[in-house]
Image (cartoon, rainbow, N blue to C red; front, side, top):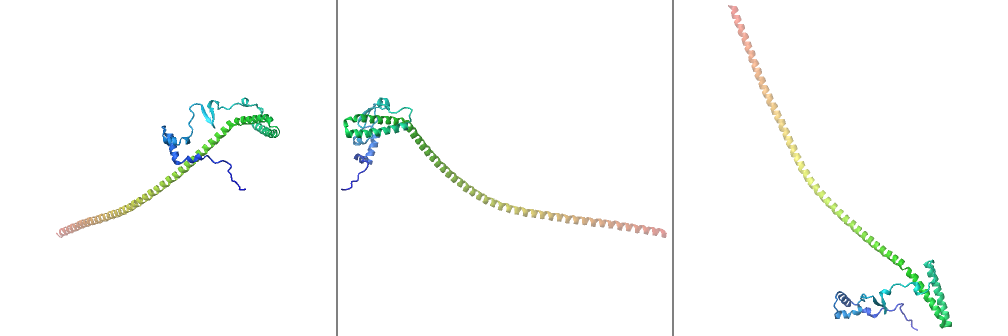
Length: 270
């Protein structure tokens, strides 16, 4: 006997092959436009169902209304097989055990007398109804936990986006700092060049100034020496004049003395 390989789940319906790119473009056009043409009729069976205008809709071929979608209470559905003060986990465990026992008793009755199986089927239905009511009581808790998970995912996404923004900001700041550093280096180098040029100019000016100062000082010294020489010459001339004058005076005194002596001698001779 050949081994037959079968899948655990059946294949999807064959009409999924009709969702091609061409049909998807037609679906988008039909959703955007309100008029019906041949293209919209071609993909009419591929369009999602429209929202119910009134409170009536079909679910798995069964007509339903939005007014009767609320969950019925357990008292209207069946008898309550647990006590209110018990914990929900203990209630579910108890109902699960009673469901297994009722199922085994149903199998036993069906093997002996199938006519008497109605009571077991009703008990199984009551157990399942009670279990469904208990599970529905966990719906708000499940919704809250699901909401917490969604909020945590949103927080993780925001944290990741904030971290990415911080990384981008740090990289941007690093680039700006590098640009500023390079710009300051260029400015410093240009300033150093200008300073070096200015220093050279200042050194040349200082050399010129020093030369001018030296020449000025030499000129001053020469002038001083020339003035001193002139003073010396003038003083020498004045001294010579004074000496000449003195000599003249002395000679006059000598002449006067000689004349007086001569006069006196002549008088004595007389």
